Each structure stands twice: as structure tokens, then as C-alpha cells.
Amino acid sequence: MNNNETAPHLIDAATNHDSLHTISSTTSAWDEVAAIISGLIGGGRYGLKIRIPHAFVMTFLFGNKLPFRRKLQVIAKLAAEHSINLASFACLYKILLASMKVLSRLIPQNDGSGDGGASVHSGILRRLIKSVVSMVINGPFSSSLKRTINPSVSTPAGIPQHPYHAFLAGAVGGYIVWGRYSSVNYQLILYLASRILVGCIKLAREKGIRPFSSKKLKFANSYPYGAAVIWGTVMMLFEEYPEVLHPSLRRSMDEIYRFASFGYSSSSVSDVL
Image (cartoon, rainbow, N blue to C red; front, side, top):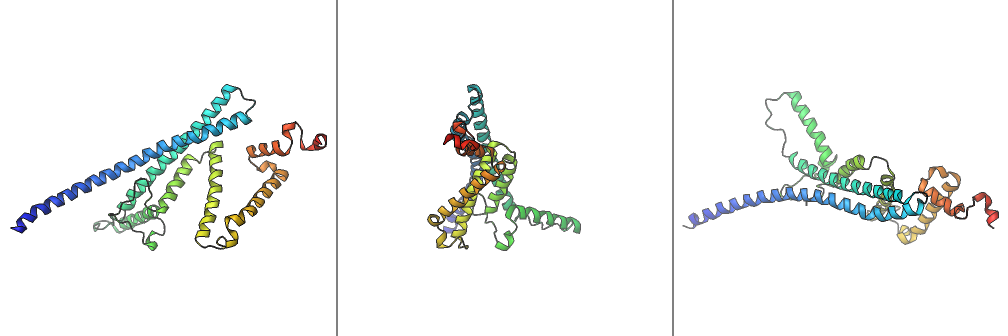
């Protein structure tokens, strides 16, 4: 009697589990789509918020010879480029993450078994292609690190399945979106390069890598020396090799150190004194 009453409940529970699994899979797919749309909107909005004030100040500060209408056109162009590029990169980055997440789950399941009728050469070629794709998707050291994916554990939408996915998606997006030279793109590349350098030094200190982990190289102790090296280097380049500096930096330094605001050059310092 108890067994007969329990059986329908087990069947209902199994059916409900399958339904929940289907809903969960559908929700996960829609979550990835939502993450892509969110990146598109967030990138565009942030680009406008950051670039409009900066372009406004720089254009009116250094574009004295431009007419007012032209200044507004320059501001709009720079803001649009920054916004579109950030939106495009964020969208492409999320698409690539979602794609690699799906591929990384499918590759281990398709082991190529059951191809007894296939030729030896076809089997070798198939395994080679699968190995290359697996190395690209899961990283070159995935097998040695045993970074297998547990299908029951889902990564949140918009988050890389592996850290390697973030690098690969960022590299592809960087080449496609930011690979074209422009003043906006170049400025962002320089900004990121400086932040990456500081971040790598902090990471090396956290990992205990010498000499960065030394107590003498803490931020409070090393900052004055860093400032001395950077300013000493830029002033030497400005005085001896000004052509290698970025034009905007060179113009700013010319105005400060060449008495441009007084209408004099460095050759007429005695006239000012």
C-alpha cells in the first residue's frame, strides 16, 4: 500500500525536476542575452558620461581657433566614437564569453566514440581538430591543471567560465574594436597600459614575487622614487627628443616650459627676466 502511494509521488517529482531543469536552462540562456544587452547599454552610457565632459573641456581649452559650431561637432564626434566603441566591445566580449562557455561544455561530451566505420585518417583529423578547438576554448594547460567543467555547476551569466576565456574574448574584442588607430582609442590604450602595469606590480607583491614583495617597496616607500623616475624621464625626452612624445603632451609641455603663454620661446628667456 505504501509502495503504491509512493510511486506516483516519485513520478511527479521526476517530472517536476525535468521541468525545472528545462526552465533553468531557458533562464540561463536568457540571462546570457540579458548580460549582452546590459553590456551594450552600459558601455554606451558610460562612454557618453565620460567623454562628453572631457571633450568639452579639451576642445574649448585647446581649440581656440575653431568656430563654435565646429567645436560642438568635434565634441559630438569624440563622444559618439567613445560610446559606440565601448558599447561594441562590451557586447562582443559578452557574446564571446557566452559562446566559449557553451563550447567548453560541449567539447568534453563529444569524445568522438562510436566512429568505428570512419577511416583512420578521418579519425586522426577529427581528433586533431578537436584538440585544437579544446586548447583554444579551455586553454593550453587545461588538461594538466585538470580544469574540467562540472555541468551541474553553472557560471553566472556574463562571467567567464575560465580566466583564459576573459583574455581570449578581450583580445579578440580589442583587435576588432580598438585595433583601429584614433585619438580616442589611443588614449584608452595608454590609460589601460598604465593601470595594467600598476596592477601587475600589485599582483606580484600579493604572490610574494621578489623584489616586489619586499617591505621596502610598499606603496608609501616606492611612490616618491616612481615619481622621480617618471618625471625625470619625461623631462629628458622633452628636452632632447620631443618628437617621440605624443603631440598633446608636447603641446602642453611647450606651453608650460617654453613660455608660450607669454608669447616667448625658450631662446628669449632673458627678455622675460
